[in-house]
Image (tube, rainbow, N blue to C red; front, side, top):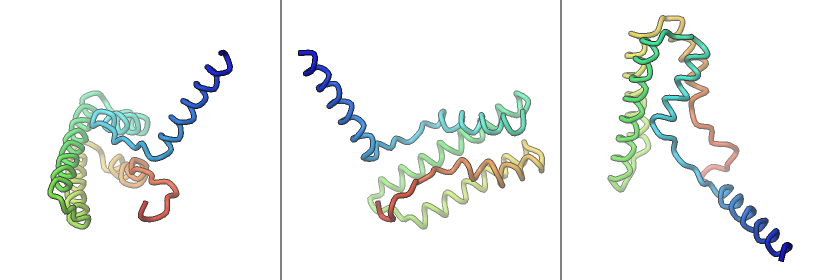
Amino acid sequence: MKKQFVLMVAAVLIGATSLKAQGGFQRRTVEERVAMVHQKLDSAFKLEAAKQAKVDSVFANYYRTADKAREDMMASGNPDRDAMRAKMTEMAGDRDDKLKGILTEDQMKTWKDSIEPSMRPQRGNRPPGQ
């Protein structure tokens, strides 16, 4: 009886890990993404609370707008990757313009050169097309 229970638990664990390995990717919520940016900016700049709240607001608006644009594009039935890339680039430019009003020039340079590239999703070593 004990062996059957242990084998059953092992089978469930193996099954769960194999399902997770099959690509159980879940997009982070807006709040989770803003928290990630908040943490990275806080560790790099130690912004005062008022500035950090403004930055968080800029990123929350950016992520909501990007999610909405992505949903609209996918709902159209024929997503155009080039059009989506252009729209995302435009939105990122608007976000950066708003950040320039909050961050100093040195902070903005650090954001563009080091922090922003680290925020991009990592795709791993998957072959193209998968």
